[in-house]
Image 1 (tube, rainbow, N blue to C red):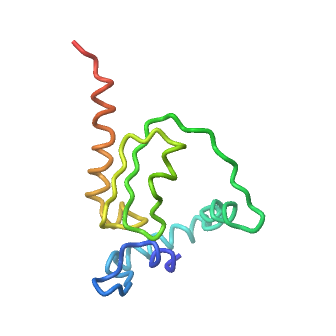
Image 2: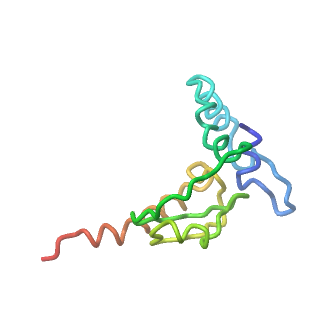
Length: 131
């Protein structure tokens, strides 16, 4: 688990040296590890990766999703390009955030909250009764 946190987090310095403790405290990492350990949920958390990337796996083409979608792409190794998502989602907001990695709620919570608010603001205003 810590290897994934190290690889997926925005924890590199200006020279490219990765250090997990630049992004997290030891308590934050230990708390997450203990949640997996005590609830015995590491297997279910890895199921999607196994089913997607194991030998012989196939990914069925999903139908387009018409629900308004917002994407905040944080600075992580698996950043998806917008052109891969557009055929399948009704993208109303796409933002690239340069700080924070795969775990933005811990790495850059202010940017995550900002992106959520900016995505929902026009949807909320469209639902207000006129009068």
